[in-house]
Length: 169
Image 1 (cartoon, rainbow, N blue to C red):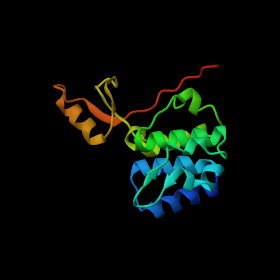
Image 2 (tube, helix red, strand yellow):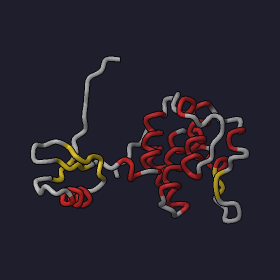
Image 3 (cartoon, rainbow, N blue to C red):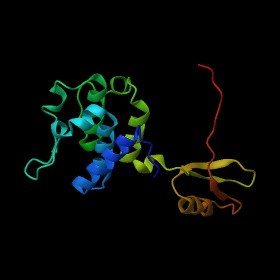
């Protein structure tokens, strides 16, 4: 999976945090990626995450109350905590979270947490005339099984092309 980082410092922070906790699961990756977007969160990571074995984990009770928090760092903290363990509060709705300059990187964090939802190749089954009869299939193997399940053997499994349209907003 290719990951887009906001800066080299963001990338270095992400790698160092994942290495520090030695856990490469999607929840930790999404958390540290999201917290690493904000320079303030990077600088104050000890206020946001407890690395000790006794109290390991996020610090939701105090993290958002820190004096150093800005609107952008709070959005990073909220989304990171939500992706880590589903923590929600009244400010975790998309309008509140994505109304900042970090929005493009928030999407990357979501991709880290839910990688199967963002696979690059999606497959479909087409009939002999090229009409799509099944769409949005996750794997070529599964698409081939669908194609064989139809009584007409002229059905094929192919990569599904995205549909684009120009809309002026």
